[in-house]
Image (tube, rainbow, N blue to C red; front, side, top):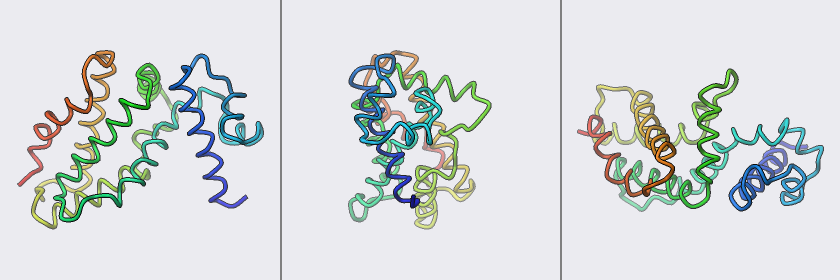
Length: 194
């Protein structure tokens, strides 16, 4: 099987699983339903995942799919800072509209206690590569400080996003994550702007 087909198959499984998790809940979703909805086989499912719980760490894949879609959609002449705010708004919109808060809470708790791979921190993800390219562009255009490395700024940005998501989960989604971030992210990131 080619790498593209492998990624396609894995992506179909992940997409189907998260749609089912959102529609019927994590507890009510079976592996068989995921296989059926994804149009794949039991062998394919177990090739990529040990079971349903293993899919919790795949949320970063869903987010990166969204970033792949967004990376070429920036309006012309948009500042680097505005690109970061645009990405944040779009990500938080996806979270509010398509990700069950209980599932997001479960994902965050597994990332806190896992001894293995921490998907949210994997700097090979498109998320980190895209952020870094925007930050480097912003430093080149003298929008962002050069007193911090691009990597440090990306880490700060990602940490701010995670903090907002974590707090939103703690508060059980009592407020709009997207609206709150629109007000707070510029405050959090004021130290990087020139």
